[in-house]
Amino acid sequence: MPAPERIPAGSLTAVELLIRGELTVRGQIREASNAVLYCTVAYEEQSAACVYKPVAGERPLWDFPDGTLAQREVAAYEVSEALGWGLVPPTVLRDGPYGEGMVQLWVEQQPGDDAAEGAAAGGGPELLALVEGDEPGDGWKAVGFAEVGEGRTALLVHADDARLRQLAVLDAVINNADRKGGHLVIGADGQLFGIDHGVTFNVEDKLRTLLWGWAGEKLPEEALDALGALRDGLAAGAPLAVRLGELLTSAEVDAVRERVAALLAAGRHPVPSGEWPAIPWPPV
Image (cartoon, rainbow, N blue to C red; front, side, top):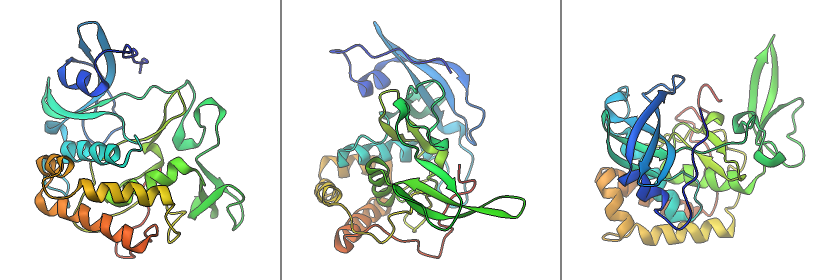
């Protein structure tokens, strides 16, 4: 896809542009399981590239109510912003050429960079890898063994990276059922983003992720501080609680509160429940 135009400084914010701009479909991302359209959004002299996922293009899922994935993507952005980590690209719910849907700012990447395969922008460290042996090595966290063909296995690891650790906490809060390697995107400026948050916020424990390397470890102080602020923001009548109530059911909002409270009480990263596959398939 072509690189997006920059949003000029001192003008509309990205969210305002996504809400107010004219949405024009430029193509379709065919690898996705649901309808994902590559678009431009323009308002007066401003424009940017974005992704548009119309509700009408969502495939039914047995464990999520029909027609709710777009709202969940927006809710994930709202929670990410409340945590103060900016891990989800600006995301809004609005009407488009094919009806209401999620519209998210396209993340421009440097040519050849692919977070799923590990190459970080600007020559930064790899994020995911397969290594020989039983130990992850310095700077890595073990996830588990994976078959690599011809009866061989390799150890799947992810980087011991503070950005990934924040994303692991976010996923625990929103109950992300599909944190694949392909859902990690590194922007041209080196910022890490998580995308594709449609299967989130279920009231049942469905956490599936490649970021289990910190399972059971103590949460960093900055994560506990962010979770404490999020707990306050989820109080009844608070703006975040009201906004999530527009996007999710009351039971789902209550479940977010319960997950935040549980993380704060334990002070540790969650561990796999054993009642649900812990790693998504395919992992990348």
